[in-house]
Amino acid sequence: MDLDIIEDADVDERAVLLISGSIDLDSREKLLAAGRESLGRDDVDGLILDLAGVTFMDSTGIGAFVELSRDAEDREASFAIRNPSPRVQRLVELVGLTDVWAPSTDS
Image (tube, rainbow, N blue to C red; front, side):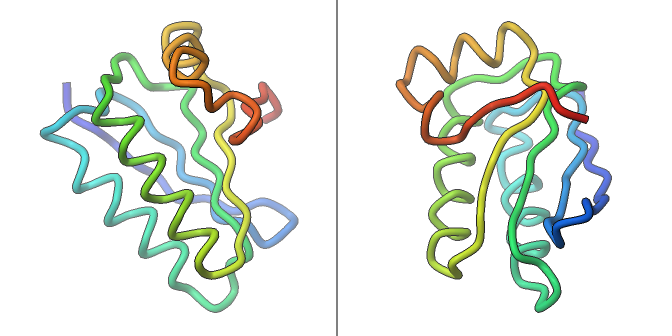
């Protein structure tokens, strides 16, 4: 399955990327490009990845999240994930990043 990304925003001037499909080696660059484009805008103070539509993610996805979180940190912006599926939540827990990215089920 392909990766689809729709950009939205929240009230706190954070870019929200609504992600659906598979996050893997084939889609990694598309995710990184979208996240970096959002973080590069002057009106953005943070990045939220909404993962409600993610059907598959492997360690490549975790690596992309790490890169985006570092990019956000470099520009003093926030980074968080939201609405992870149970499978994605488990992967985040396995690598020990649950507290770092503060996953939530907020809409």
